[in-house]
Length: 141
Image (cartoon, rainbow, N blue to C red; front, side, top):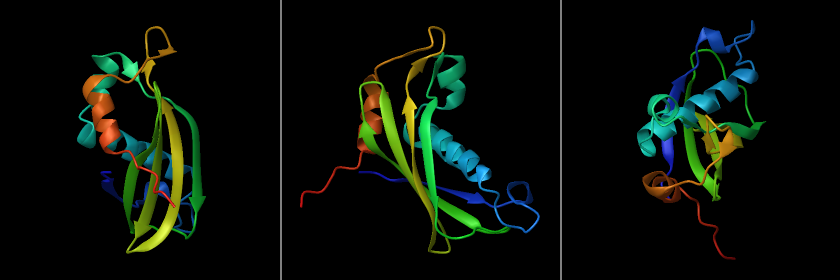
């Protein structure tokens, strides 16, 4: 399994008046990491996916568990990988650290969608192969 990594600098725009990341911003960051994952690891940038191929990957569920506060000036080191790959859907797991300290983990479920018909589409060819390369294989007990 290949894990994709991406760092995000925590900026003033992410924080509440106390200088701590306002929790909805973490979902925006998770989306940024997902978009970067599709561009850099899968080889299918959103600009091409949406405007040329007329496809999308809307989220159908998202969950984050917070372990430690993240503050203005921190650098969040995100990791993302695939934990489930279905016919037209996938579940991506993510985790983030600041200076080696776990700050959050979570999952987002996405569905490969035809933007014209607004219906699901099976993953195909190189995209499916690239997603499978990031699939975490469960370890046997």
